[in-house]
Length: 112
Image (cartoon, rainbow, N blue to C red; front, top):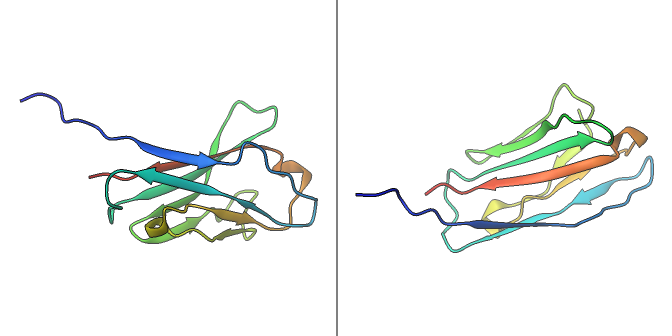
């Protein structure tokens, strides 16, 4: 028996999102898979500040529960608005600051 076949999951986000300091912005993340949505689905958002080489995890959804960063720069400013069973992994960042400028990445895993 050979290796198990892997099936891809396609993740879609906006290329660029603009916001005003003090306002809020929705970071949309939708996905598509030929497979049903597993109870083990996980969604992770990463942030890489402009000019930085390092990326940090700021949000994680697993086992049906959202886990919001409780120590970093986004503490108490992030809201989970997604619904994995509707193929949505979106978050909202409130009270935007200049330091929020950078790259946000949505990573979705839907294990069989």
